[in-house]
Length: 331
Ligand code: NAD
Image: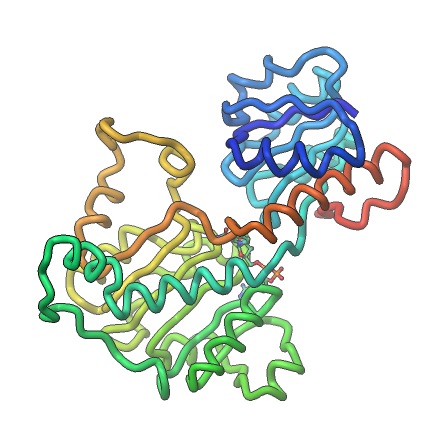
C-alpha cells in the first residue's frame, strides 16, 4: 500500500515509521493539511490517505482524492465529524478510524486541566520563577464532595467518571445509553437539564454531531450554577464560544479549561509565534485569568500514539487483504 499522510507532525513520522516495520508499506508524510488546494499533491500509485482531526474530507476533497486513485481514507483519530460519510459511501471509498486508543490519555488530560486550573498551577509555576512566593490569588477548592456532571459516558467519559469518584465527587451523567457498570459504581444518570442545574463541574465527552453542536450555549449556560467549572476535551463545536465568553465576562462561568476550540484548525498544531492572530473570539478568550487552553493534546501520550499508529496500519492491512473492516465508520 502507498499511504499519503496529511497534517503530519514529527511524532506521526516517528510512531508510524516504527509501526510500519511490520508492514513495510510506502509512507509519505506531508505537513500540509488536507483541503481542495492540496489534493493535487497525491502522486500516482498512492492509494490510501491518512488524515487527522482538522483535515477537511468534504465532498469536493473526496471526489478529487478518488479521481487521483485514493481508495481508502484512514483516519488516525477517533472522531470523524470532518468527513462527508455519504459522499465517501457513494464513491465506495471506506473510511476507517481508531475508535479507542488509550481513552485514559484524554480522561487523564481532562483531570490535569481541572486540577491545574483549580489550583492555579500555571500561575504558581511562573510566580516561583519570579522569586514571588506569595499565595494571593492561588486559592482553589476541594474536589472532594463536589458534584461533577459528565455528558457522554463512552470510553473516555466512563474513565473520567471513575477518576472523579476516586476524588470523592458525586458524579451525575447524561448519555442516551446508560453504562450499567458505572451506575453500579455510583454514577447517577439524570436528564441533561439536571446535569446543567446541579453540577459544580461539567465535563464534555460526547461526540460532535448535528444534535450536539453548540450544546453549551447561552440558554444552557443560564441553567448552570453560577461559578460553574466547564471542561471540554471532546470537540470545540460542542461549545458556542461567543456565549461562553459572555458568561466568563459576567462570571456565570467560574472557570473554563479546553483542549479543543471550534476554530482550532487555523491555530492548533502550528507554530504561529510572532504572527498576528485574526480570530477575535480566541483573542478575547485568552485574556481571562480563569481560562486554561491546551492545543488538542489530550491524545498525546506514548501509549495512545503507539496504538493510533498500530491500529491505523492494521486497518489498512485489513483493506489490502479484503478482510472485514471492523473499524469502518458507517453512516
Ligand atoms: P465514545 O464513542 O466511546 O463515547 C461517546 C459517548 O457519547 C457515547 O456513549 C454516546 O452514546 C454519547 N453521546 C452521543 N451523543 C450524545 C449526546 N447528544 N448527549 C450525550 N451523550 C451522547 O467516544 P470516546 O472515545 O469516549 O470519545 C469522546 C469524544 O472525545 C470523541 O467524540 C472525540 O470528539 C473526543 N476526543 C478528543 C481527543 C483529544 O485529544 N482531545 C482524543 C480522542 C477523542
